[in-house]
Each structure stands twice: as C-alpha cells, then as structure tokens.
Image (cartoon, rainbow, N blue to C red):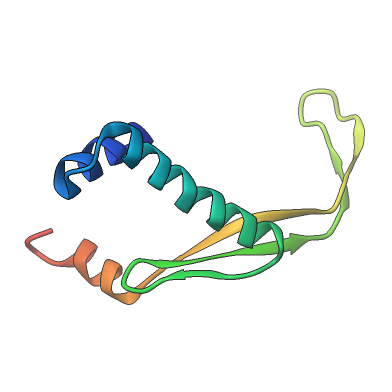
Length: 94
C-alpha cells in the first residue's frame, strides 16, 4: 500500500472526497514528521512507535576507491512494531 492507496481507501471507507482524504493523510504525516523533527516520540497504539536515533560521526572508507571519508553525525527515524501488529503479522490467519 502506498500513500495514494491509503487516500483512496480512506475516501471510500469514510465517505470523504479524494481531496479531503488527501488533505487528512497529508496532515497526519506532516504532524508526525514535525514531532520527529523536534525529537519527540510518535506512538500509534496497536501499530507501533516512531522515534529518532542519533548516530555519531565516524571515519569510513569508500569500498570502491578505498578513499577515507568523514561521515557526519546524523539523526535517523526508527520504527518499533507494536505488540498487536506483531501478533497479527504472525497469526496463522494473517
């Protein structure tokens, strides 16, 4: 499922226009992104949680050229699956 599929499904299930469903999905993703950018945790009960993890910089090598490179510190998003979703994914019915 991609964003367009989600918008179409939301539109049909909730009786919304495609335009309203698109705006709603966009708003949800925007708010989640903003919270993560502020270093906040985003939790969706029954689904999972998102947070950012800080990775320190390090000196690495380009595997093709063996050139030494400095990799800068960075923040990356991390998703942890919720227990209910994990159970659903591993149930026999699927």
